[in-house]
Image 1 (cartoon, rainbow, N blue to C red):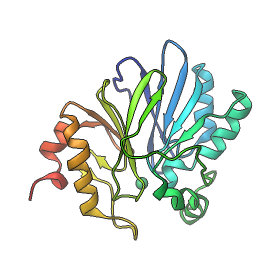
Image 2: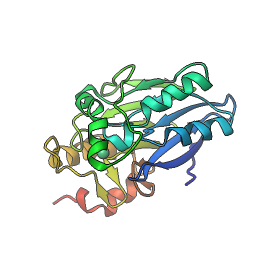
Image 3: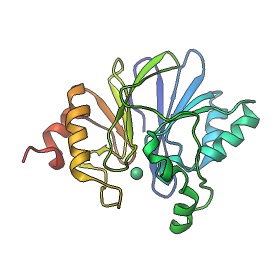
Image 4: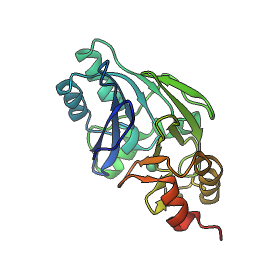
Length: 224
Ligand SMILES: [Zn+2]
């Protein structure tokens, strides 16, 4: 899947049995890259980076679920060797620490191999801005699917990485013990939609969309 990310290159790589959309973003000028949600298939991701001649600077995590964060530890281990330096790992918000620490257990439950607990260099906070490869990404805390879920928004490029907050035509599931449906819908309405209809969203699963298309057609966002 190829999407426009003005000034950058973007490639979406589905990972794990859940076909989670891991986004690889890089600067064509410097060959520096960041990944959003390397949930698994660490060897494949490392090979793609190497074949493209890219150096992974940063990993961003939207939330602590296994298909989004399970590949972090093995990928950092591989890159510490091949790049001579592991990437820094940022996010999600610290309320998801309990999920990052139970990935191996979740993976066993699903019968998935190669997914490990993740540790991060820094948790993100709501409203924080990250300077990343010459871009500015804003962090929005939008809980409900998980308590510490965040979105990363490049307002200049008009693109947002939204993990399992919002999908084309639906929203993230909230039927976990720690889920909260009304809170999720409120967060989408109050924090995401005001960014503007033209913002392209890259969700954790399925195809991309825009905030305008979801505002118009997403049944979960209809004012009832
Ligand atoms: Zn999730």
